[in-house]
Image (cartoon, rainbow, N blue to C red):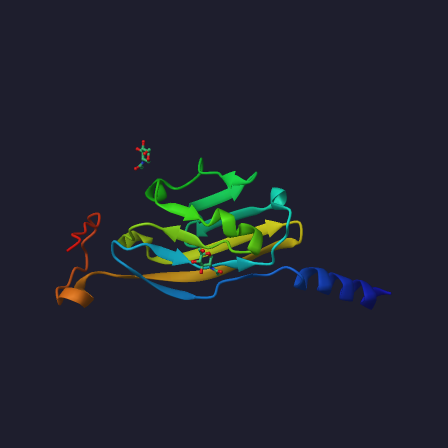
Length: 151
Ligand SMILES: *[C@@H]1O[C@H](CO)[C@@H](O)[C@H](O)[C@H]1NC(C)=O
Ligand SMILES: *[C@@H]1O[C@H](CO)[C@@H](O)[C@H](O)[C@H]1NC(C)=O
């Protein structure tokens, strides 16, 4: 009897998954970055909770529940800079877009998702690439906001 219960639990747990296709993402200064995250979809979005947070200090990067963005607890550094692909949520796509990457965006990001099928999380790292790779100048230590000249 007990093994049967274990098997059922196992199936329940295994039926929900959160995965990140890219465990390491290189983000380029001033460009948008898309942090990929996929989960086992459920047609009923009313139970869906998506939270992106920084692993180091649990700062909230973005969250979504009650079928809309919930940004009251969003860390100020991410204000107006993040979005989910809301129309992709029913397909199990919880990818996060960060506009105009800054040096402080580098670090570890946790994608946490729950819906009627379960709860899961996945971790990924964003590394920051300044402009030095393109212009032969070392910009390390430059923490000013990015500016771009479109030529
Ligand atoms: C999620 O949707 C975005 C926008 O359509 C797309 O660029 C991205 O590749 C998708 N990510 C995954 C993991 O499916
Ligand atoms: C975010 O955008 C709103 C509306 O455009 C603006 O009032 C607010 O100051 C912006 N916040 C930040 C932190 O840039």
